[in-house]
Image (cartoon, rainbow, N blue to C red; front, side):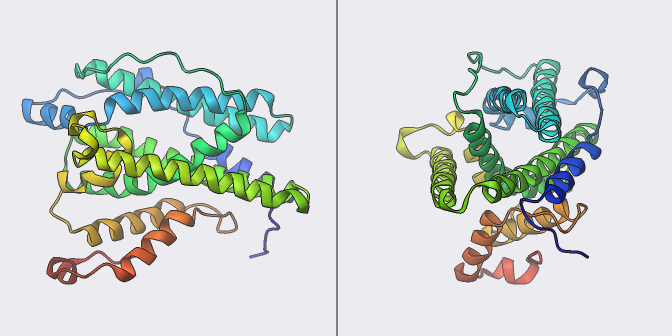
Length: 293
């Protein structure tokens, strides 16, 4: 396959058209939510993500739409505005679910538009890269364990794949943006991008520490950030190694359907592969570990 030059018009056309052409036009109001028995409802309510998910999706939609409205390139603007719509739709789906099953969600203030939409979008996108890598693995475990009703899993399967599309877009958009910068400005771009990645990673580690009860925080106060790092034991008795290998496998599977010339996220999968090289192997992992991607 012909190699794609990052930053070229062909690159832009490919990552934008891929995103636009794979959009699923479902309407949240038409989703059918099943009745749940007491046990299934209890499991759904036990997930410590709903407050943070409701707040984060609403805030993310505002940030993405803000960039789409000021983007001068028509094709980029179309793709970014579509992503903003999908983020708004995620927020609407979560609202429908929590109301349908009487899951309490704390009120949160209306998100403000960012002063710098470009870097707000970049920072948010890298946060999604971190969260979704672990969420892909967790979701696969939840499907296997039949943690919630199949119709609900089907709805969130669509959302999981939309998150993969968002990540594919942000990774290629960031590389395109960097390549379009003059050479002297690229080191500053890289430094600021690294700072944003580090800030997002710190937020996730802090959330994981809250989940473990450190820093005086109760487990119930933990955010979605901590949940994605700590909650594989809620679905199965997999070891940490097996869980991380599951995440790698799911991450590869999610992105395999897209044009191989497009860039994939490398930071988190690469860091996890490096970590697995030094992580001691337990008996359970040796006996039944999932093959790494």
